[in-house]
Length: 307
Ligand SMILES: NC(=O)c1ccc[n+]([C@@H]2O[C@H](COP(=O)([O-])OP(=O)(O)OC[C@H]3O[C@@H](n4cnc5c(N)ncnc54)[C@H](O)[C@@H]3O)[C@@H](O)[C@H]2O)c1
Image 1: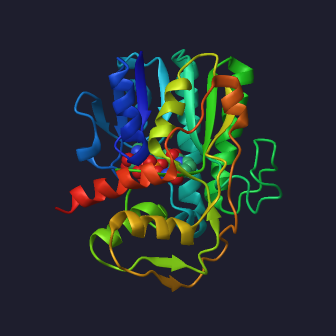
Image 2: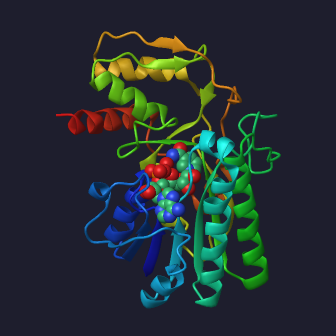
Image 3: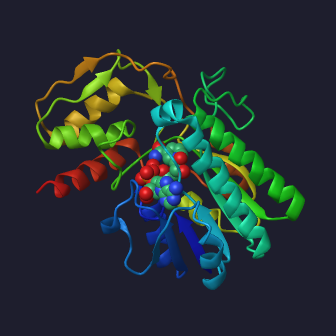
């Protein structure tokens, strides 16, 4: 298949590109490199340094004879979405809508969309949250993802486009940016490698559902199948507090550094954990990488970055 991966130079996208190439697909990447890095991009992918909002995107899709779109490019900063919701909506809603329209006019069969499970359900009513949990995003980022999801549903029912929404929990692994506001694993790994103290926001008892990027890649391989349509949570169903995550990372690093506590983040959910039963029962997907194994791999990656 000829597959377009938007955001293919980013953290998650770069791993998906590698897996699709290994599976024998021809991969085309569109990325504006706003947060992605060329060093993570597989040299076998055909690269267009381009914004997804660029009016020339449909020409690229046509000339490359794309069969499937895997859409990972996004404005991913929750705080930027709060200070500039218009920019967030432009990239995450209009950008997605333009790709969907191109998909229809070019008769592209498949559209996979990276959505958020962590940001979709807000302060949860039940644990873990299934796809049936009310969607009550706390930020414009979550709102724009929900809106884009609804466009996918519309394009599926109206035009028969095979659409797959993957709602990820908190993804971690090699290539994640350690300088962003999110990505606590990457941030803490870099701190520990540099013998600096990680700073835990608040009391550290807030929980997240951490999933290895390797498991996310498997989900994106399954999603290529034409029969895989609908909305699926992709998480582990396990809650881990930031305190226990930090403890585990400290152990892996073998360093005798204690963490500091800073002020809690405004508007942060207390508990976040999602249920992957639907994806498991429909397509057999389940997380295979334990938290500890994933953290060992991620820490090793950050160690190699700084030698
Ligand atoms: N990391 C997570 O825990 C997580 C959780 C849920 C959902 N997601 C979603 O997964 C996707 C990938 O996230 P990530 O963590 O790999 O982030 P990332 O920032 O590493 O990747 C995003 C990529 O998109 C590119 N990009 C951004 N805006 C663009 C634009 N307008 N045009 C072209 N390229 C653009 C960036 O340069 C980058 O390479 C995003 O859609 C994100 O919302 C991530």
